[in-house]
Image 1: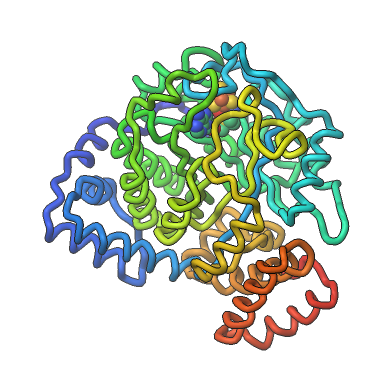
Image 2: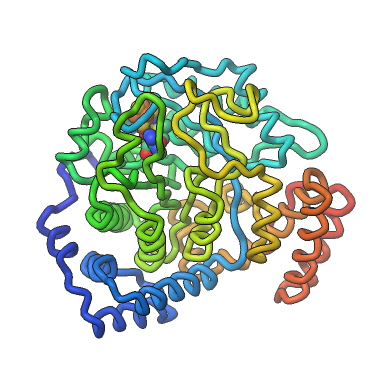
Length: 464
Ligand code: SAM
Ligand code: SF4
């Protein structure tokens, strides 16, 4: 497809959706449609109706429906990953970000290969298997990014430390450059539009390539055409009206699905957090409350039932735990948000970090809470990506809810590896107990137990 770069964010269409009146009967119809086994998602007008709803009792029903859909499609597992900041140098001036070019107080750092490998090794020793590499925007050659990815994959630490999937949150590139990057076997290309509201977008991106709204809007088109089939989207909540941006984000996902037959692999829900050197970040122009964030997450789960949904350590532990029930399927843990942050200190240095982290629990603590408070199986699974269940193929499986059949056993295998090699004593005890109970009730009990015996005697990286 040649890129026409016309905005597909139609103001009239969004205005209509945002002005929907949330009549009780209409809301009830939407809820029962969501509960039907087809899981077809929602129209933009339906999304608008839900977001305008005030009735507390009906919101409880919506939350419950979101929980049920998540449980049906994704089951009881929660994927865990860590961000690894490679560079905080940046040519852009996003007014909300600590990395922006004109922030003279920030100490700039681009990790060398040795430093990158050291950060990777530290994360491996915590038990991580999935990384998200993050960069500021400077004109890095894609070949350089390929080298970084290869350097991370090359790191191995005893007893079973290795990275099995690398996702990237990087500036969007041309199709030709994405083609080069795709040779590095990356998982998801993640890129947030920040806000779909063009006047606001132009106000907060004052210079650099990112100031070009349409270049960013077509980032996922280009990455897909460059051969990276899994892509992640998001809005930076706090910049503009959350209703507008949520409706527009869902429109974006629908446009991609209509164009390529593949919806987004993941959607993230970052909220603007205080960042040293950014006044705007301390006073978000459209601050989103915890309650509104819960609504956004639940409505997105209803609108896009099959999408992976990510919440980062920008949010505090208690809220993250609530959001998990409403639809979140992936969680970062033990994060540092500055280049070299894992090596340097126990806390991020404010003069190098992108923003303040609210959930400072270690990976082991997050896992303990997932297991004991929610009965979730933490997962380090990378099976789909390595068995080429990506893009269209992944969506086909997810839509048949088969993902559960792969995800559950694979979560059990990778979690058991973690418990064997990296868990604290109390996490190991609680984790083994949960695994035993859940496998006992599984339809695939025998098959799973056979593989678990292998894990117990030292086998690694088992997946269906
Ligand atoms: N430089 C690339 C870009 O802008 O797409 C990728 C890395 S950037 C560090 C990743 C994301 O961080 C941005 O897309 C933005 O949504 C988010 N971000 C920036 N400033 C933030 C802040 N103060 N609080 C929370 N998230 C922020
Ligand atoms: Fe640079 Fe990305 Fe921060 Fe913007 S959000 S200043 S592009 S690192």
